[in-house]
Image (cartoon, rainbow, N blue to C red):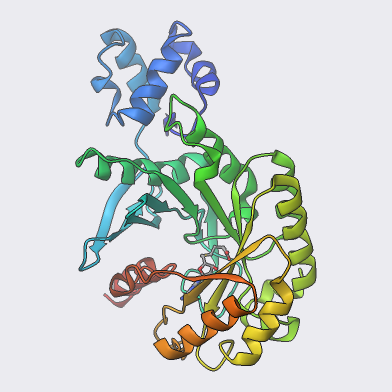
Length: 351
Ligand code: SAH
């Protein structure tokens, strides 16, 4: 019999799940604190719960979700990438980035991805399955545990790892709400950024939650023809619909929307593209985040040189569009989406 895992449950759910063990109600909160704040490896460690109850719990439930399968650290120590194995043997990537302004964790929301963007490694073998809320949370908890060795903690979460978060809506929302609970990580909703390839119905649903989460839209192109070549999802949700939804999100939440634009040499980095981007985004509550592509082997796509990147960003700024270039963290450790998992999968295939 597989034991029910308590990690990923709200206190009320823990209370309901464990009611057959004859625990007093207040024990639910104790369990949550052990699981989320102290990250107890097993029930045995939960010493404020009577021993007999701990044994009963251990016979019926589990708490662990991920184990480290591979790790890479950038040469400058700023970024660590973890390949974390899930209980069914699949693995996901999680990236810990240490910025001057705090520690940020990039979580995956699916094993693989179904979006098919041509520049991305996560999607090469399609989507395998959705992660549960607990599996997404376990990635943040893992990073938090690593940080706690230096008395540090996770300050912000970017939902930008492998997977399309709005294609796994309920689990992603549960994850965010759990992180917010004070018996869990007590994080404010403002410290979350969710990146989407542009699932319009999901964007509207998120707006209706009334949470001040930052929304990031993967744009990557300036017209539908070019965007469809890079992102097949554009056939279903064309750019103007995505941008209209992003506008509604900005109006409803008052939050500035981030547009991500991966710069690919010769494909979307010319002066014409910069000018078109300006006409699309001027007068909107928007930031542009330029991401020089992390080239995936065999895809034949290349990163523009530094001069072209600078010219692009300067053109945007002169045109009145807020733009920043994403700091290149972890290129030396294949921090681009899905690249570590893809490498490990291939090594396994090749043996
Ligand atoms: N499914 C979500 C999250 C994807 S990852 C989405 O589409 O937004 C976060 C960002 O990295 C997205 O903008 C994605 O398009 C971009 N990205 C993926 N692979 C990349 C690569 N090799 N180089 C640069 N950016 C990449």
